[in-house]
Length: 616
Image: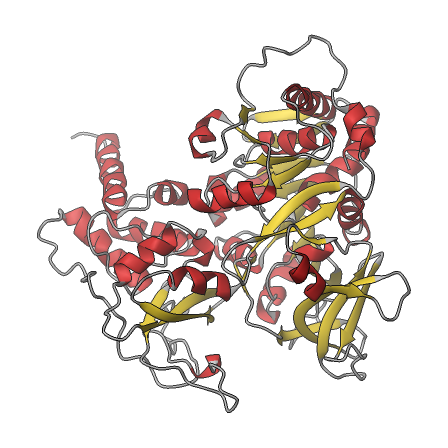
């Protein structure tokens, strides 16, 4: 992939390659800067066969870091700097990362001893040097490791998918027939670095002469800000999850894109119908990390009224629907989705048994390999793949693959929890996680302690929004826990919102079994006594309660530890504007997510608004 970018830099050295905010790099500047990073890595002893963690926030530094690692002949390991420190440390140990590439403002979060700061002076730099790292990069073959991408693991720890250079190039270039990239394209990237579709965002335009605009954090989290960015930079291509597209439409974005890509979660017919007239072409795309980014694509049309298929295989991709004996499903019948072709990766790092379980030889193609996705599907009348559910309990939360078993393992670490079950409940275009906990005999669950433990160890998208205490599990006839018969969470949990983002007058979340009577609150009483809070903080406590159906326990309660999500933060922005007449950014609220910090932000904004008013 770095060779393709270098070739494009030779053709168009002065064209803008990547920009973020006020920073922009031409193709030549990008390649030279990445080459400098490769040289710095080489002087640290990093080269072919090594693994380098990349912990960089949304900026041009991210592209420079990824490209620099490849130029050095090493493999990159994306590590989200917002993840809990314990999770970051585990990923670095598990990956065997020799060094972490980061920037000064994030250096304190790095959890490995050897750190290289991208924004620090390079004492060993040589003026007018050619691009460094070419020799090491040329030594890497197509079957050598390009990157490790971590996904949720059912055993309680994230697992790393090993992706080689051949798979990376195939995964990126397979999207070319879908997008039909043009040199004039302006791609806006809103994808997280820990989510492999970002590699299409970055490398497909850079290999075809386009320009990449990396949206800043405040723009990713605010539909109005993102809409302004799209319109202001002349964007032509955007890849995003259904939730992000909904956020844009809810903010009043009118649409002017040439191509819109929607993936990571199911695309509802209603969202597709609202989005399709506002873009030139709308594609619904699908694929697991283990088969390198995307595997199928479907061009959405007016015919997609009842369901939106995920479509047909991309180039050098095979999709098979098989039964439990690996026999082809009958025409029109449901089967499990197995994917083959050039994007199938070599498996999971350090997990040979799991690799053997999920990857197998293709019985229909000598020398081929298949990956078992766990997704269930059938072919419609046109031959397009339609997904209909899962063969296991895995779910997608805001585009991220989540294994409930990983969350359950963390919750069961509490001494009072005998057993935990986590399931997903629908909330409009979003999904929320609900944790069901069975206490040990003689123990009372301390929800505040359990929430805090989970928040210290799990990414925000994996934190349950509600906790329900159960005395015993509903069982299927064969004795397994019947997840469909679990009690419903509290009625106000994540109730659907109307078009303005406010709670709608609709039925609460549905689910099998009786409604739960209570959620354990031992050690975490609701904040009924607001006498210790000023008027602003007390009013904000009410806002939190409306959004989460759960009051903060004290002024230092963390919004995300209560199950709040980035979508809730965006709704909070509107609620604060309505209640106080001031507008805060979602980024401000997310960076300091305690009740006291939110109250201070509101007080500061109110003071500034008062000072700006004309004096009589």
